[in-house]
Amino acid sequence: MGGWRDLKTAAEALVSPSKILLSVRLLTVFAGAVATVLLLGPFHAPDGWDKVAHGTMFYGFTLLALVCLPWNRKGDIVLAVIAIAAASELAQGVTGRDMSLF
Image (cartoon, rainbow, N blue to C red; front, side, top):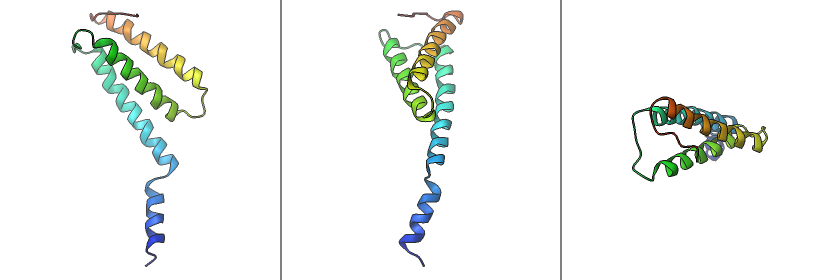
């Protein structure tokens, strides 16, 4: 019958920094899988929205990567996401979709 003390202990067991980091990492893997399907699948954004969709998606990936990899240099993470974005455009060109690097 610890009351608040038991509740606090239960909350700490559910929400810890390592569990939050694991959750964000799993979310990043899931988001990457969804993005791969959307980028390379037969889906097409309405005219003019492709750049907005790509920008929003890779901005989100950058934020998730910064949370998932807090010990890495932020510049390296940003360069890696830019390289992945360029690779996704090249992959779109290979799969028959419109490729645009600019």
